[in-house]
Image (cartoon, rainbow, N blue to C red; front, side, top):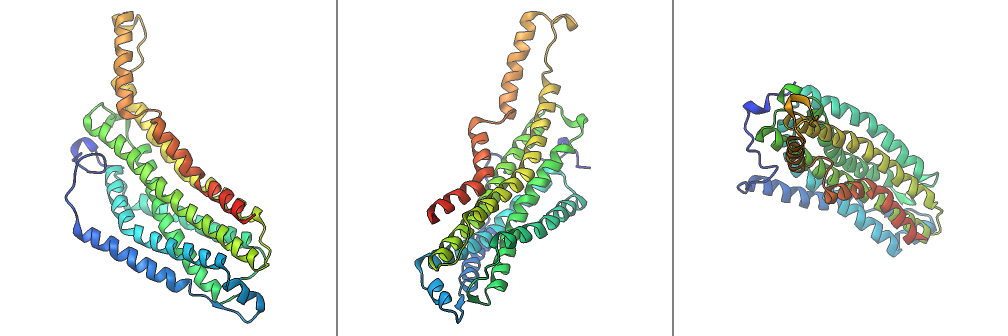
Length: 319
C-alpha cells in the first residue's frame, strides 16, 4: 500500500523544477562510462581460431564494426546504471512501492531473462563463432545488457504498479495528485527510451555480427535478425503498454473526480453549466495529458518499435 501522497512532499524534481548539481552522482556516472568502455573493449578482444575462416572473419572491416558496436554498447549499458538507479529510487518514492513490490517486479524479469538467453542462442543457429573463448565473453556482454535493460524494465513495472495501487479516495484534484500523474508519465518515457535504446543496440550488434559472418562466407539468415528484433519489440511492448495504461487510467480517475461528465437536468444542470463544466474538464484533461500528447505518443510508438526497426535496417545493410 503506497503512502498517502497528500501527506508527503510534492517537490520531487522529476517533473519540472531545478536541482543542484550532485557531483558525486556525476562522478559515478563518468566512472561508469569509463569502466564500461574499458570492459567492453577488453571483452571484444577476441582471438582468432586456427581455421582459415577464422582469420578471414577477424580480418574483415565488418568484424571491426561489430566489435566496436559491442564495446560501445557495454560502455553505454554500464554507464547508464547510476542514472537508472537514481531514477528508479525517485520513481519508487513517488509510486510508494515497498520492497515486496520491487522484488516481485525483479522476479518477473528474472523469468524473462532465461527466455531472452534461450531466444538469443536459438537465433544464432548452429554456427559457432570462429573465435577462441568467444562464447563466455559474449555471455558476459549479454548479461550486462540484460542487467541494464532490466533496471529500466523494473522502473516501468514500478510506475505501473504505483498507478494501479492508487486508491480512489486519493484521486482528489489536488496539485500533488496532478504532479504524481505527470511524474509517472515522465518516468514512463525515460525508462521506455532507455529500454528501447538498449534493446536496439543489442539488435544492431546482432545485425553487425551477421554482416561479419557473411563477409567470411558463414551463413547467417536475415530472418534470424528480424525475428530477434520482433521478439524484443513484443517484449518491450508487453512491459510498457500496461504501465502506460495504468497511468492513463489514473489520470482519467482524477479527471472524473474533478470534473465528472455533466448530465443536463441533474442537480439543476443547465446546458450552459454543462458546456462550462466540459470546458473546464477539457482544460484539466490537457493538464493531466489524458490520452497523451501527440509528440509523446509518437515517441512511445517509435521506442517500442526500435528493436524491429533496427533489425530491418541491419538486415537491409547486410543484403
